[in-house]
Figure (cartoon, helix red, strand yellow):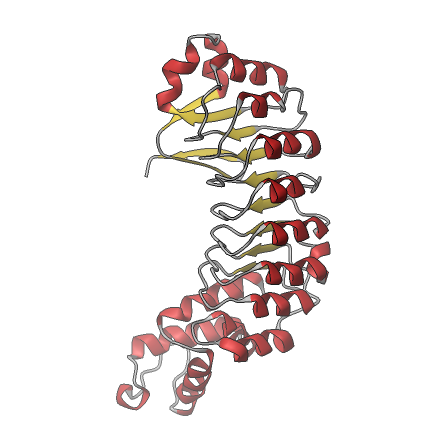
Length: 320
């Protein structure tokens, strides 16, 4: 089953409440003579509309019977889903997006960690039940040798203890820790030891200080994209990146700062040869431009009032 198959299976969540219900439903559909392409059956016997039945069989037709085993991620799957994943997950799975799956727990991460899948991308965004224990399974599993992108945004139970374990990730290039509000400089400095990092999102981590940012500048020599939105950022934090060889995008949108001046960003722009953009809030314009060259302002600064993010290596400024 391909990565696209897994994404397709997820669309069935609108029709069913659990893995077992769907599994039984598919076999009932077949027993009643439903087939794909569209063939009308008895809605009264089935309990759902013909259109819904057709959609279910369309998806199952594309993913095959094995695709049903991916439904451990759905509401109500529980331990049945975990055991299914342990025994049936395909060995070539590289991309796994579990964003918003409210029942994903540390047991699921144990299943992932104990599998032989060469997972390169894993999103656990909004998986609120994930804890440090779950990260330990990932860090000690075979996926620690293959995982390149890890999204832990809004996993609010994660602490410095769990982040310390991420140092075992050997090829981790992208890490998203937005809204993991329990993190402090202990975890921040641990992150700085992951030298493979290229993209790092620390949005809204209020407990991080200059110690973390300076450590990132000194140790993460391959870092290209750094999001410090709503963080406490000082001029010294910015100065630490002078001479950095890879930094391309620095997001300071809505960051909390009292001593960053135009001259601070001017020095960074001129002293960081790879730099392409610095995103700041538009209310900073008057504060910054008075001691910056106009050419530097127009070339590097992006004054914004909405969301700013990177998509396919292109800076996107979103007003929504």
